[in-house]
Image (tube, rainbow, N blue to C red; front, top):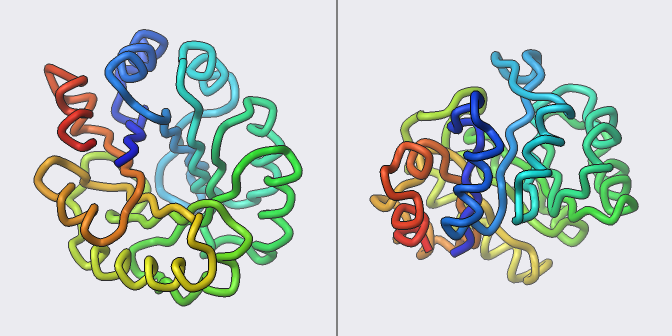
Length: 212
């Protein structure tokens, strides 16, 4: 299991140290939640802060856009050369064009689904992306409770991926902990985003190891 701690749960007063700590503790990616206050009812961080996080990170960034006007934000963050940029299918009118735009930057494109959006909504796009991010909470805020129905969705998505693009990864974000990691693995999940579980732990290396 790959682990991508979300810096949404970090102490922003010492963000550089926080990012360094999770990289040293064994994180595979640094997950960055970008919210614009329109697509979700919260406003998080822009390029200046993310640039600082990128400087402190010894692991690649995993940027999750929860925004309107996705192309603008892709152009904004592409210079940081993250491993992935994911965007919400619910918000994008031209997903194939945006996937190609992300790939043209040399970045791996990913699609994100809200809890209520069926996996069938992206079946025709699976061959064009490198990862699908399933939200297991309603996006906008950290520390929410895991929605168990997402396990069934992950298993169904895995079947589609095996048929259409076996190299595509499944990532899950929201309420992930050592209590549900086995079920997530069984459902075919490859990468987990964990915010409060990792950053709220006294031993972050042990927290990440328990997910791996």
